[in-house]
Amino acid sequence: MEVNFEQILEQSNKIKNYIKTEVAEFSDEKLNWKMNEKKWSILEVVSHLNRVYEKYLDNFQLAIDSAPELSSDEVLEFQSTILGRLSIYSMRPKGDKRRFKMKTFDFFNPISEPDKKNETIDLFLANKEAFNELIRQARVKNLKDIKMPTALGERMKFYVPECFRFILAHEQRHIVQIASILEDIE
Image (cartoon, rainbow, N blue to C red):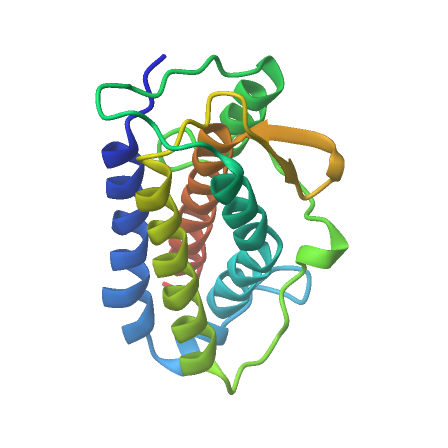
């Protein structure tokens, strides 16, 4: 299967623009509202996404840096793994609903800082731009055989294009979560 980095970048920018133009404009009250103590606020969702980037951005960079350059007439094709496809499927929302309820790993739990709205959102936007730059770098690399560790470490690895899709599916899942929080507020 050919990797469409332009489509991956487009999906990533859509998420970035939503956070930048919609979420960043929410009032502090809306960003910090929680249905109950077990639920996350919108700002905590963004904080969680930042925690994910803390874990993945360096791994992406190392994997991309280790890959050889594609020749000018070469197109990146790779076969996705069953585990990769299942992981992406389970993360990606179905319409406006999350497919499965999942508990996050403790190290991905958000840092609750209600008074740091701007810092949390600015960090997300900076992380998103770093992620987008990695997508751009990957366009010219032969990533066919390059795997990178997931949040589970060296025990579970994805091919780099799979990992881009996994991160996007994860973010799409949390955009649906934000929409659900907004519905509960109203």
